[in-house]
Amino acid sequence: MAKNGFVAAMDGLSWIVKLILCIPMLNFIWGIYRIVKGATENKGLILIAGILWIIPGGVICWLVDLITTIVSGRPTIFA
Image 1 (cartoon, one colour):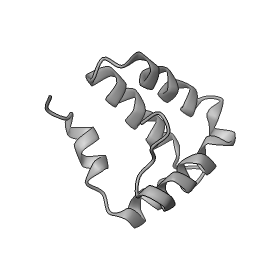
Image 2 (cartoon, one colour):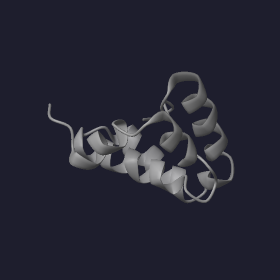
Image 3 (cartoon, one colour):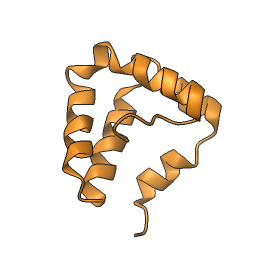
């Protein structure tokens, strides 16, 4: 299956840019990433996680993205 342009662009970012996008005010971008990825791959759980990542998840989910990006090079929880 071919990747969506947005998903491929986000996957191709350097590690430091991915890390910067994990800070609280920019973390909604990873929520959008999850929504687009879930919609293009027909994965409902990722789509729902993306929606929740933006609205109520902004309080603590940025920390989860930050830790997983440091450890594995990209956000991996529900992505």
